[in-house]
Image (cartoon, helix red, strand yellow):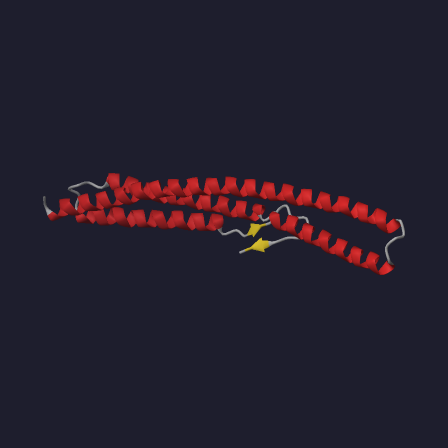
Length: 182
């Protein structure tokens, strides 16, 4: 086999291998992200239910304390301390529930990561197509032109993806204010 034929064959094998292995790894990444999304959703839901149950229990306890206080058997100083404690508990529970809403932000990040995977899959597909287009016995000038054309196409795909995903992650569902990342 001549050097020209060998070079074309090796480039074709390299590009096809990069495309195939890259796609296999992307499939694993997408599977992991899907599982992460499911686990995150379940964890947030369970934590939210637990915090709401805790809030209900504390509210019930507060009603009992209010009954005891209204009976007149508690000093004014104790009543003031109980009110401060009640306010602290309410603030902490509200803060914890609000913090759980970070799921909105992480879901946006996971969605963007999946979009990046799709963009990378397109890039790898381009490499795979290029690998199929290369002739085993093609001239080095033809190979050089094909590689140059592919490089331009890959740079455009990369720039398009970058522009699409260069958006900040915004909180959509927090009641206590707005958060913006990046």
